Length: 189
Image (cartoon, rainbow, N blue to C red):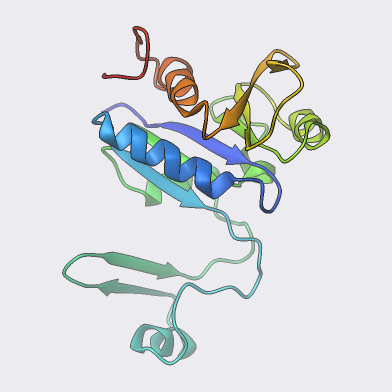
């Protein structure tokens, strides 16, 4: 089984990263691709669990790992120290069978990896330039939500205005990340 392609959407707070992931996940899923996602959270004491719930109580009691299972979801809570979980281990935790993993954030952890595709979400040209300086190729494009870019490219990367150029973004992801031949527009695998 082929390893999934990984596309990170990187950018600062309120730059449209989540909206971009939603757009891509929806469009790619609609085209028949198996899509997984992962999100980086910066807050040190952040928890996904709800205070007082049973799984939270297990956690508060000191378990190393707890698995919550319902008829429609499985959630794994595992203790880690800082960022001692490597990039490969994070991807392995997702399991197998995906065509693409869409990641929100992870700029410092994987922004310099050449086996990870990047998409920059920016609120301004200056912000995009700054983010591009921190990344290694491959960078697919720079996107901005509702931004009228002054040109079509920045440092050889397409500048896309979303949501207006959503189909163009999907076509770029199909061609560059998933390496699918696209005729005309993103209308099939």
